[in-house]
Length: 209
Length: 209
Image 1 (cartoon, one colour):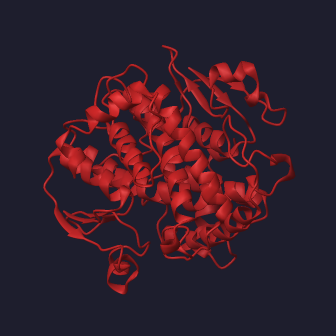
Image 2 (spheres, helix red, strand yellow):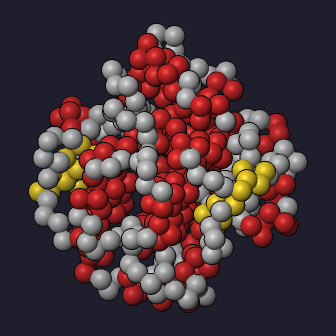
Image 3 (cartoon, rainbow over the protein chains, first blue to last red):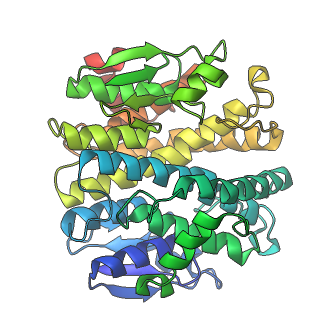
């Protein structure tokens, strides 16, 4: 399998940690987003949507979203399970993961892409250009701070985000918190459960990559 | 199981069609979004996020996103499979479903919620109020039209969205196309494959609900 990766992209990191936790061997190809390699003709032949990560399997099929890469690999390499084993676990993990996606990642992406000078006219990923909307940057920042505050209640007294087992919900939340930290938006110092969880997860070898 | 539903909400319809295709018995409770029942104290006890659909299972656990309701029910009632049987099918279906979610539903929601007079200060679902952003309504409308045009290539010559079998990708795309039609945004008349697919799917009993 070929894995198209970028060290600085949060979505790529989500797939990379998942692959490391499963212990799967992949051939990694680095794509340089800074030099806009993902917008070039060569990478468009790999993924016309101009995004990373991409996982190419042996028959040539390519998955171009983190969600699809997770779904494929979880089914192909079921141990250790990272998306739940019972129906209830799967539902609980998916519910939390969806909240992280919409209220966390999407909010943070709206903030960053609509305010960073380097992302002028690139307010959305993909092959089409969209102008920045300053009001959307403000709303994204406000929602990111709200979600960072809401994490305390999501974690509660549980060891992991979705309960007793490490899952994609932990991967997702870790990558989101680090993404926000990079723009100096952090967990509130009073969020003791969230901070306890964060420092525990940061000790896993997979979080170093 | 209790299913909190609303006849006019696209997300509820996605869960409702899934339940009908599986032939699962649920007790349905209707929530009246028009009278803002979902924002009231009583419904907040069911779902503090103030959204439908919600599925409550026997032990009292509640799933509050379409994705979680699908994940739970697919695992609990595997036949007929609607989310893929092989690893590759699961990956392909998830990839397409994610495109429909971000480039279709999210774009359409941005258009509607940021322009409809009835949604003033309700530019996002959930317990927090957000002001409408007119530029986001324009971008959402433009992206919705772009995605309606992109559907022709997504369908190609396949009988169903993800290949030879009906799946959640068909449910999602049908509900999106009908959601856009309601605001008079339609598949281009030259999209012969997309229109052939649409008229076939519309004949299924589950599409009537």
